[in-house]
Amino acid sequence: MFKRLLGCVREYKKPTIVTLVFIVLEAIIEVFIPKVTADLINAIEDGVATQDMLLTRGILLVVMAIASLSCGGIAGYACAKASAGFAKNLRHDLFEKIQGFSFENMDHFSTTSLVTRMTTDVANVQMSFMMLIRTAIRSPLMLIFSIIMAFWNGGSLALTFVVVIPVLVAGLLTVARFAMPSFRRVFKKYDKLNESIEENVRGMRVVKGFSREEHEKEKFGAAAENIRRDFVKAERIVALNGPLMNLCMYFNMIFILFFASKFIITGTGPDIGVGQIQMMLNYGMQVLMSLMMLSMIYVMLTMSAESMHRIDEVLTEKSALTSPENALYEVRDGSIDFNGVSFKYSAAAERYALENVDLHIRSGMTVGILGGTGSSKTTLVQLIPRLYDATEGEVLVGGVNVREYDLDTLRHAVAMVLQKNLLFSGTIKENLRWGNENATDEELIEACKLAEAHDFITSFPDGYDTRIEQGGTNVSGGQKQRLCIARALLARPKILILDDSTSAVDTKTDAFIRRGFKEFIPETTKIIIAQRVASVEDADLILVLENGRIAARGTHSELYATSEIYREVYDSQKKGGENSDEA
Image 1 (spheres, one colour):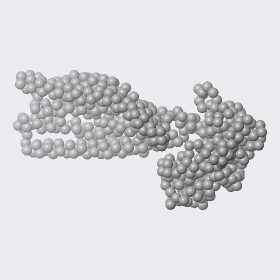
Image 2 (cartoon, helix red, strand yellow):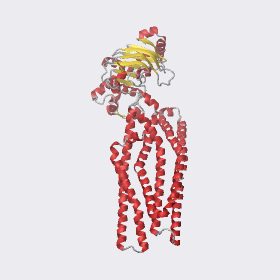
Image 3 (spheres, helix red, strand yellow):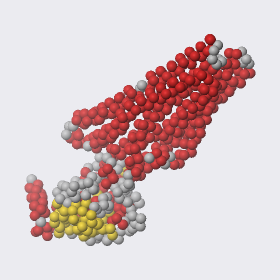
Image 4 (tube, one colour):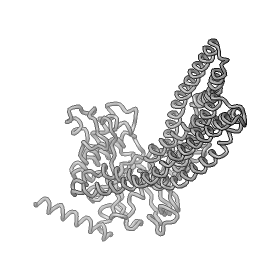
């Protein structure tokens, strides 16, 4: 996992190495400053310090301080560049991985969980990376160098570290151990918090329509309170680091001052001067601060371990759908064949969503699909562009099994307008060119005329340059549907699938759209899923689905004569339409 994550450093290896080099130099310089200071104080105490010595040692200390500051500054700049670049690459790799996911993979992760992983979790890992290449190098070096210098120059006074270090290490590890479970729980609860926010924002109209604002506030408040409670519990434990640090620091000061004073007063023990005492206090502070920083690194890494694992889950997820090695890069025509196809959404599912489907559609045909909610109409058409793979049997497009095509090639040949029409923030032109980024203005207009969208677009003050808000909230449902149809037409597909995509337009406009399809894209196979019989009445073939099976098939006249389900739907809708007209 660490190897995979560190692979995201890539082009930022140089600033990472620069950080490490200058951090080492900073630590080396800092650890010698107390030694130079102690020698100067001892010389003054012994009365052997000359003016030249004071000036020379003073200049040396200033140079060392400036050098240490410069090394720290360069390391800080390089570290910021490296960590920000690492996070950028990590987000890029995550986003690229998600783009390659099939619907099956997306079902494995919730949308809000993926958002949390790309934001909060990446931020945590970025912070850990920054601490690893800077603090996690500096602190151990300072710890080791300070202890060596303390024993080398302080003699028996350095024995204080034999007591202080184990106590501080044990205390810090204990604090981290009890705090970590709370931190781990927090990250999982972030998903629920983000889910509450996303649902509320997306469904704002529904929330207001049912006056459920208070309910949503309570739900959000409960999620926020859960996170607050876990953070408070963890922070209370982590807050013990401060008192523990102070305890060890003051113990260190008392130990050094007590024994140093005793040695000086009694004249027993090693020969100790004021400078030596000051040096030992400085080294003691460096040791304790290094341990404190290491404890912070430990806490941060433990906190980030869950984030690393969640990110790694996405990076190691293998797409359920991939292009074969010797993939085909050309779709001959829009013919479609289902040969003994059965499908279920997961291996653990108890029942099949589709069962024993045999279907043969010639290129250029118009096929209508009717069926009640849950009859698997959408599931059937999603097998054509390999949004899912058939569990049993085979699906052929252009006479070739869809598994043999390059995925991009297949999906460019099959344009889908899904039930949930989605427009992106940007102009109408930019949205339309999702279907064909190289489409000319004339091609945009032609596609919009086919989709009966041209008239309402030109009624806007900015026409095709009108800006669409996020999610298409500033256009009506019918306008959104027609723009999505125009976008699909611009792809010039061999197969066009409309999944209940004209439900928000009136029957007259629906009829105009279908007539335009017949006249301008006769060679394109058109599959229309609809609730209204009128939308598929003139289709070459109509399928009636029930419980994942094709219950009936034929033309309108054939089905009206032979299918009770179709006849009931047609009569009920026709009667409803007549009543509506009379009203």
